[in-house]
Length: 402
Image (spheres, rainbow, N blue to C red):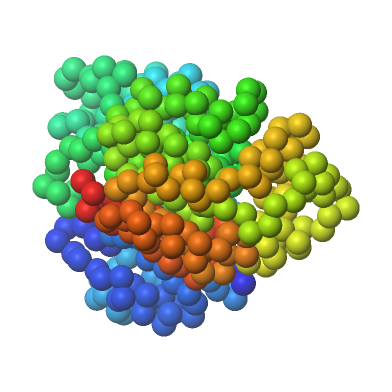
């Protein structure tokens, strides 16, 4: 059944406080199944057998349940990932302009609407429209007092290299710094599978997906050394790692110390239950005749599209790199990382993980004081199959750690 993301406009602002249970009931009343709320952001992930008229049905159910109107914008998770990957502006401009906004429309703009929006474009504000979505790149921080968009530009502008900030209307208008959330991928080393997860990031988080390097040593220690050089410039960041990157992230957290505010391990590769010859395993993974349902069954809980994406990522690695990483994976042991583990530490485990035993990870973490373990009904690729719940667990732990 298709999964969707619903973005609810202004549902928890202006003194309104809508509990997640109320949102879930409203979505279920509209025919949605398995709704997952995402903190107080107004974002809900859900399933639905029907696709037509979803926004209207949800808006009607929410109005009946909450006694006020809530504009609803619905996109499939595939559409969310595509929006996150879309780059309408050059990387140079995106780096220079401090405000980068992506917004939703209830319907596509007609030619006149596109023309009116284009008239707002200046050297300081640029717009881009694609279907029912638009992008706004601005040289001005939205949170600056008295600065309310292209029509009002007064006063000095913050330096282009100023840290990214957020404006929280529920916190008395306080301007708060965003926290970097570094995302390390699995064996494939690509950040592409994080796209939908990044799109659902909470307001406090600035995601920094970091691919695994293909040059240099592919041992766990070697990869940690290479990544350490890149990450040591950051301060107080959250380090999220899934699967193969788990033991790499443990090494990084131990080396970087207080620079890492929270280490979040998602189904980490603690120890493989069976050690295969790395060359044989690499040949099997690279074999074009291997059907996607095999990786879907082991990694993705039967989701063939996700299984294929993971398999394509693995096949894109140079053969020698894949074999070296597999050798590192098959020789990894819990004893290597046990002495390095320390709080604040969060482990997010999928109870349906068929690759790494959740019981083995739980046993390892028993010896770590104040470590938190969250178990979700999910397969090995827990970040991709339960993105909202993973973000909720990270946000809760980060809040308590801070």
